[in-house]
Amino acid sequence: MGLILLIVLPFGIGFALVRSPYSTGVSDVPHQPVPFSHEHHVSGLGIDCRYCHTSVEHSAFAGIPPTETCMTCHSQIWTNAAMLEPVRESWRTGSPLRWTRVYDLPDYVYFNHGIHVSHGIGCTTCHGPIGRMPLTRQATTLFMSWCLDCHREPERYVRPREHVFDPDWTPPENQLAQGRELVHEYQIRVGKLTDCYQCHR
View (cartoon, rainbow, N blue to C red):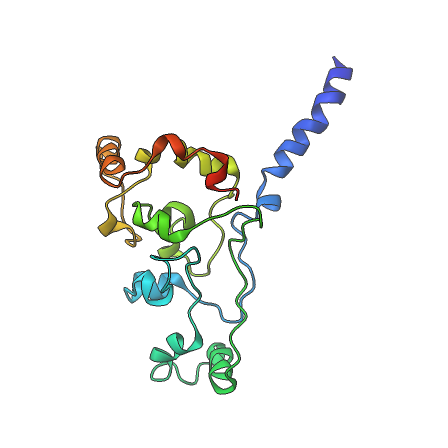
């Protein structure tokens, strides 16, 4: 029995370590040039995701806002706040802010924000309760099995397009029934979603 334990235990520890927040980065808050709060800007001020992430509906990359977007407001309000000095410096010099990516997929994985958004996958499905995050953190593991859960049963995750950017949207009681209707309406090809080439190109 002891020999079996000696053989199995390292595999169990390795498996647990690989899936732990230490390895996956879940809940990590990376250092940023400015402590940007989605909670304040999205939930507090009601700014739509697309105001800053301008390409999210039409391209693979959601887009990082240029300094000009920040300065639309911050040339008028909080103009002397110390924590916003990097933004003002970027504006003065024309040098972009160097944001740290919170989600960084491996190079061998293809992901397109526009396709997911147009097919009713909401921001919070992947990014977690982003509208309630004072500092942006990684909410999900990005493991292939996590992606495949959605690709195998999109009806459990798809929502009406008008709610894709709603950070407070909650699934209705009839989510599966509504989800099946939306999968049909949005022409989501369920049988093709788990083909390797969908994500590995």
